[in-house]
Length: 371
Image (cartoon, rainbow, N blue to C red; front, side):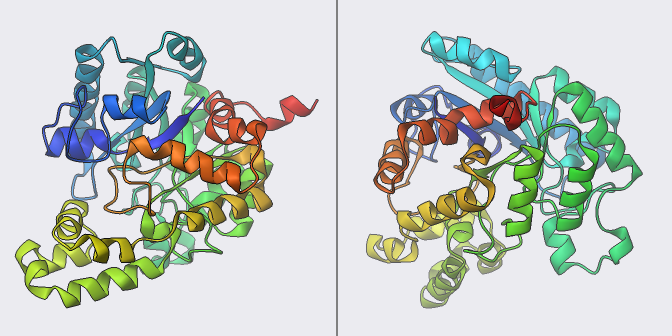
């Protein structure tokens, strides 16, 4: 089974671009037709808004995205059906449909409310990414812990954060620690009674960016029975990508200015995508890391955390560029072939692409299988 833990098509293509994902699209990396072509059997769609949305506004936007998610389910019942929990996925897949899961990327969308958290779970939320780049009142983000001026005693989970993680355990929603600061990460590990995940992160040892996980964090996920979803974003696969991108902006300053140089430097995905699409193809290809570099991250995470603790969290439509060959959701066979060539057996690939994710979404320890 092939399960992807992280896709941003709902906020980017539907909310911002008004696309119909039930049919083939020329824009973006995702639609239901291409998901089937890529062999994706279960797709997690994240509800996301950035830190400009706060409080009730952020919560309302999340609910609006969930409505659009529901509309997609209604528009293409022959192609897709929502799985409200992990146990529903195999039966949906057995009918030939894509199992669609709903997740929320950014704890600010619960607006500091346990009641809102419960509402999201009633809508079928399988995991909550505790922070995006912006911290909440109850959890500090990786970006803010590294780049902000947060006092040490203010980092991590607050008392409300502990209550939120505890309630998530009770409701069956997984705590997602991608984007979370290190202090938040370890506070959650100490608080939770269920496996957690980093839905879309890579190995810091290979790409030292605050969004990736250090070896000690990978080991902690192993002890927790959690997992890491491998992120395809070029900048988290190879941090030199950022330097190469900055050089391209400088080399094509007129184009950059026409699209908004500051938006490009700040990482606006739509602006950066438009910039890359306007460049000669050879320059774009020279910018991208090789697919083998992504496989290096898989190897490293498996070496530290173990094969039972890795999955896929592509971040398709949440970024502007991916390694060579991974242009959209139809490219999964290319990834699987490269993993096989690297020595991953059918049993290992089954864990990496599906069974590990099913286990964590079900709240089960990997030790169950060893008893």
